[in-house]
Length: 632
Ligand code: GLC
Image 1 (cartoon, rainbow, N blue to C red):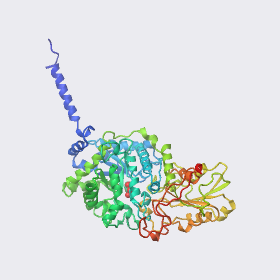
Image 2: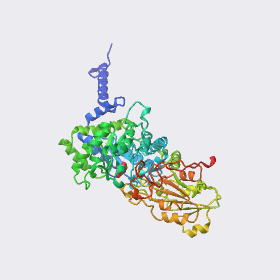
Image 3: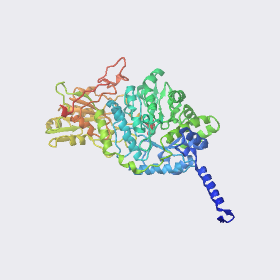
Image 4: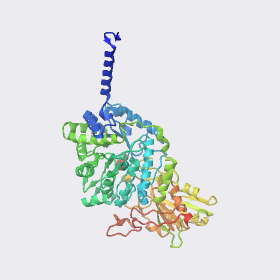
């Protein structure tokens, strides 16, 4: 029997050699951390064990989009990128443009030695609000009024789809601040002054991330390609600062901190929140970004939070006063406090260099670095980022979908609070008749999409006017809702003679605050900017009027209430203005109840439900109701 040969070797020998080579190659390519069938702990341990110090520090580094490129991702092993408010790849960028940008940066991350995917974060705090044509939901100040956790879960799910439509996998939301003083510029980001409402509204987290109770995977939990990692923020006590001064000092004893500002973090962790962002503020004079007892001792060790902790924007820089005064101290204090990922919108190489030095000189122990990286890897593994790092256009049609806009419209309806209805109880003005000869719509905010969306919309500080994105103003909604025979006249700030001479059946006056974000919104007087008050006086002094207040919080209305026939708090409703007219005209009833106390005067502040001296204009929980017209 002749044996086939190849040169000096028999065929069986060659086959064996090829098999060995193939096995060796296969084994060389097989690494545990890349195998989704391996237990999570094995994957983390295997990958961590392969990482250099530079690769570990890269995972702790989150840079801003403006500094990011494929080369930078590769050179510095960058683990995360963010868009700050208004940081977009192009004006009115499409979902595809967003996705291509994210995928390009991801290719840079994947081209590194270990191919660890990066995670891209953005402030999607009332819908995917940086993105043109996204559905803009009511801000949290209105959502707390709904007292509808199931609605919040649906909003979270819709928002996650719109975020993923753009290729992004991480939202810096929800803000679970408990706003204890409406003078705080971020009070509209808070669901309520009552922590129990804030706790209930954490149901948005399983909406954003998926529901951990539906699986046996434990927490943190992110379901996959239609969900995003969420971020409970800002830990802890951000809404309790003195006089509501943003980023300032929360003076309260430990029991008060635990009973008011901490409970929603327990709910968030139980619901699987993947990340927690630290607050700029201080607790009794100690900066939260340097507070190891609370960040590590309490959040990580006591509450067993196993996701990762992220700093705020230049949060470690602001540990010192002035900021960046002693950067090495800031890096040391922040990382040793328990911050795992550092948000570095500027000078990220300073952080990389400084942390590298402190780690190599054991000023910051490698155990702390490893804990941070383990947490970051845990989130990336559990959300399937290693298996699905690249985005595609399969969800592009979710951005601003009609279904999501209908959901937002429902949320607007449920967020409205009817504070007054008729100058005498037996003559309510609302619901308004759709059929009338001629009606007046007045006020600076009646035809202004930017005003009704508020801050964190397209730009960090929001915008005014109607060119910022796609939506429906309240004026447009009125015109769509009334009978075709009803003449609708719009004038922003009419004088009394104009109003009287036109003999309107009634008037809708829409006034309020102009957009603001963070410290730009801090206010000690909480007055409605002119010409709002003048418009109220001119119109309501001449014709039956309903006043709709667009604001991020309770504002000064006491001096004008007597002139009004009806008063509605609409907060910051977002793009779907039709939700306001749905209720004004009786297609739906008013159901909302105040989630923030409405003060008489700012001299009373801070004043919250349960306080011994409680004398509000409209108390927490107040809200008149109306029946839908079809039921009348
Ligand atoms: C901001 C805010 C924070 C936001 C972050 C990124 O300063 O404090 O809520 O998530 O920076 O934009």
